[in-house]
Amino acid sequence: ADPDPLQDFCVADLKASLSMNGFPCKPVSEVKSDDFFFDGLAKEGNTTNVFGSNVTAADVLAFPGLNTLGISMNRVDFAPGGVNPPHSHPRATEAGVIIKGKLLVGFVTTANVLHSKVLEAGEMFVIPRGLVHFQHNVGKGKAVSLTAFNSQRPGAVVLPFTLFDSTPPIPNDVLTKAFQVDENVINDIKSKFAS
Ligand code: GLV
Ligand code: MN
Image 1 (cartoon, protein in one colour):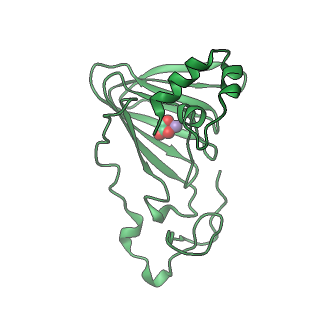
Image 2 (cartoon, protein in one colour):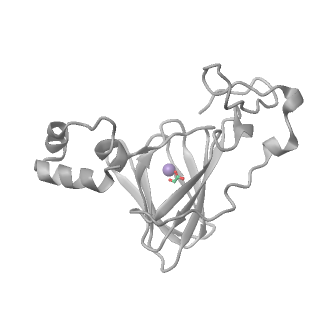
């Protein structure tokens, strides 16, 4: 989904003061082989949180060598029973492969049809760009997936946080009407995410 590169590479200068779409390139004289390698997905993420899951991103911010190349990856770790909550990526389609464990993977179309399946190690899924999706560890042990995106920075709209933990908050009047529940239900949900 990202624009095509105009040169072999453009290793991001994340600290540049220039503000642009993406990041400016480091001078070629400063580019090193190490700029094209990244070991950040080797480590297990900490799943001790309310969702029992952890996303480790290898996007352009973590791996500046990806700048202008239109791809990135995530590692997602799941505790038993863990959920990667419903979310969407505004800038990318997602392809994933299960590395370990058993995951229920699903996405919902713009016609509100849910497509879902339980997958095991080696099996793949695809999430069309922008659609809301989730993964749920339905196995006995931990689970791990690797996901790939056709954007250097797919972005993630994580619905629980988007709806109930924005700054400033979405007014309760909007949420009670949208979800057809009493204000106490909205306040209860908001309190779970209050940061
Ligand atoms: C999984 O949905 C991910 O975004 O890595
Ligand atoms: Mn995703």
